[in-house]
Length: 381
Image (cartoon, rainbow, N blue to C red):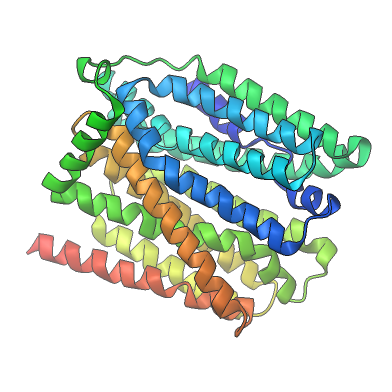
């Protein structure tokens, strides 16, 4: 299980097209408006398919979805480089969105239940933290390799390497162990969806965990797309921007690796983590100097740790058969809030510098920290 999970997490993110696909779109003649419309299509696909795919994973087979998703991604990337046009890019984004939806929820549910079956559910935080870290290492490695491969073979070579990574990811997914209980074999996905949502309505702790995941994961996940603009606004030459993004990803990686040791810390500590990370984000953003990047990296590392811990708490509170369904509900919430953050950033970014917008985006985390701290004090009383 462990080796398969780590290999899957690495290959799932080792896509050389990630850092250069915007260049492919622009080189193919797409306008900024057309490129933005592709991003919207991508997000909407994930929103529409997130929960149904989670219910399907609970009703049929999580492993099947985990190897089917990368095959869809491979097909989408092949379309991009073989038939570069708006229609092919749109179809590729639909396939890519479906790929993400199929894997979201299914992976967490499969890993947690297999560990629980072996009496090792307490290893979940540590394993998933390391898996996230390997995914981030894969992103950094793909970013470093994309430039040389693009220079030698152009977009088709980058696309071929990305398709190969997807195929290897699908092959790796077939090696996951999956022992389905009697409730996971014969029910239809609609019945599974109803059961999972009913569990959330009955259990207040599950509802709270479902809300916490998108609140913690969405804001900094959206801000990640704007970090190059923040770094450039700090006076960094454009050619040096990618190298200064590496510390931010390194901070995220450290946050993932800290999930295991931090799992047993209580709500008060979790609230403090959010508050301190929010403070680092605000100060780093408004500093206006490259030294502020270190604080942003520290903030992103804290938010990544909080994201993993929020998922751990959700998995620990789910007791029924709808684990993938409810995890997908949390992912759906994350997608929706992320889209809202994109809209808010677009509005704020037209009036304020990027550093000020980053600082303003720390406010939701401070509010969440206050709410979690209040709940912890109430529980203590």
